[in-house]
Amino acid sequence: MTTYAPALDETLTQRLRQAVRGEIIEPGDPDYDEARAVYNAMHDKRPAIIVRAADAGDIRAAVDFARDHELLLAVRGGSHSVPGYGTCDEGVVLDLGTMRGIRVDPEKRTARAEGGCTWADFNHATHAFGLATTGGVVSTTGIGGLTTGGGMGHLARRCGLACDNLISVDLVTADGSFVTCTDEHNADLMWAVRGGGGNFGVVASFEYRLHPVADILGGPTFYPLDGDVIRAYRELVADSAEEFNALLVVGLGPPLPFLPERWHGRPMCGIVTCFSGPEDEDDRILARLAGLGPVVGQHVARMPYPVINTLFDELLPAGLYHYWKGSFSRGLPDGAIDAYTEYGATTPTIQSATVVFPIDGACHRVGPEETAFAYRDADFSTALSPTLPTRAECEANIDWARAFAAALEPYSAGGGYVNFMDADDQDRVRANYRQNYDRLASVKRRYDPGNLFRLNHNIAP
Image (cartoon, rainbow, N blue to C red; front, side, top):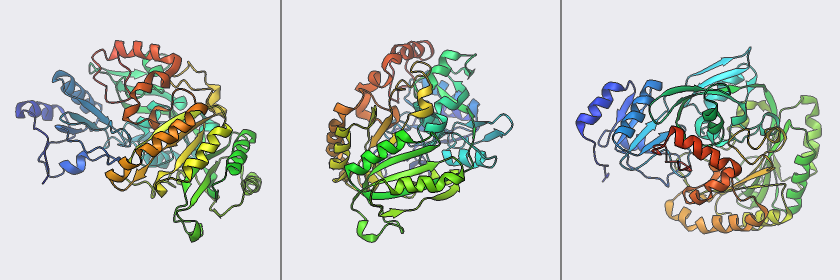
């Protein structure tokens, strides 16, 4: 039997209905259970009302409603927030998922995208013009949460983080104001949105700088789990031009047709390549990959850039149970590599892969105080997660994730990437922002003194 959240007073909700063009869903509605579900099934929350915004006016109405009636407000884009910040109990969920318009200006090499877009939406629109920007590694991820947290992805070494390519945002603040932020107008908000998460308002639309990227050489190469392979990967990244990006994946061999069956479910490491340089260098890249160690499976080929962003989609559908930890490091110290091999050998499931993102190159050409994203001296960012089909199995493996994170800690920076943090990492927020924390708190006090936007890795006003 379904348990419903308490309904709000009908007079209140009727006023909200009159102010909103989009759909409003309440407990008892036929599609309530579907509407309240989020990507990470660990979070089974029952909001009092869900507002599917149609436009910026609906965002303003929902923000005003939550603030005026002192209700929790959860803002949802792609719904991938691992700590479940896109939902809440007995509050308001502002769902931007129907706001997915995109306008590309191929002459200026820019794109304006609404806050509910996913990277699949964005990449499809920009690829038609042979353009792209850095954005995630799972296509169903929302552009909003990824960008406001910093934004790592396959083009980071060449193009910088997603937030580095952000030109402007249209933002609804806690008092219901609609403001456009650029480096010249509302510059303090613009600075804070580039890495400060959802602490400062609801982004109705993002304007990005685009880069000429059409086809790339991409795909996975699998090796036995071996520290020597990871050390060779470390040298490959250090020696390569910025057009070469490669994620390190540590975990269990997936059941892919190009991977021999005897390797399915066995500890392995993989390199997911995205080379956006000229095609006449492909053979050299393939030779370097072959030299990292004994290749047991490979599917690397020329492909349209949007395809590389879909390779994890089938492995990581909505509805699995996740718990995450993350860290930054300068280089890949041997001690960290030892931890990857030790804990990688006991990875709980195929979906529980540990992923290491290189964030040097263009990411290092932005100063640590130019954006809210402070770790411009980090070379790699690690995400590790037990991801399992049931809540009980995920909870049973949380200690594995915590022990793995503790083993990496001596070789890591004090903070980590906010988008790789789970709900029990609130005590790391100051460390995540380093020297930028006090300035972020000042911006928070100015624009959200009541902390309406607190369902996030919260920067208290």
